[in-house]
Image (cartoon, rainbow, N blue to C red; front, side, top):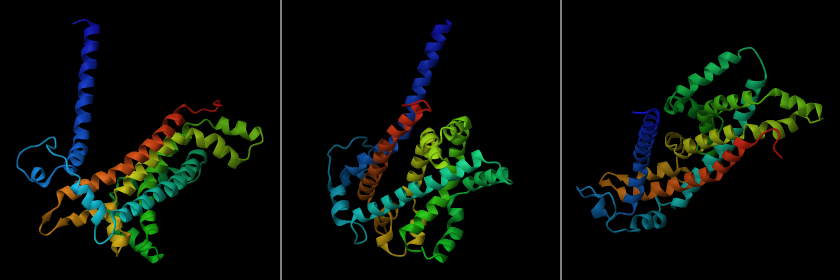
Length: 283
């Protein structure tokens, strides 16, 4: 086999592996969406039905009109959106400021602080449930969406700081010094020089924070005492009853829950691409 043939064969194998990984990752999403459109006979049959033989909107209609726990499904979607967007805005701001301080300044205990961030990031969110919940309730944020936001910021902040630190450190400090020589203040330099260059990292951390907060179940269930404050993952638990599981409603609700995540990603992915090509000489 010639080198060109080996190279072509390697490319084919690599593409085939990529397609298989994609199919493996996308199959649960496809099964969720397709099950939401299946009738109950197709859902509970013992036969394997990869495609709905007859589509129905019964499950979506029931979830949207009847609601969950005497509340509209839009209430839970709104609560999830508030928690997710609040986590992104507050967490991104603190992560960017902290990452800039770590990357640009040398202070005592800097290495220990970075190691602590890694250790905290390795801990599961459930391990911090009790201490975070106690502190949140002591400051009067129990049974409030702001309390869930604070908890999610605490969970996602270490990852955001660690990732953004790399982006900030990659920006040459000479660019900031050149802006200072031209008369720009530190705040102007931060927003007009440093911020555009670390935008790709900020978008990546935003996506991680949004998905983590949007899918949160533990904190929303533990901190809230009334159903009006529940988020969408908690609302889906009501379809697991003692008499059985309403898989059609669960899959329909999960599909509706996935749509905002897709929309958020489509909105920020353009910023990610534009940020990758943004530079000091752009414009």
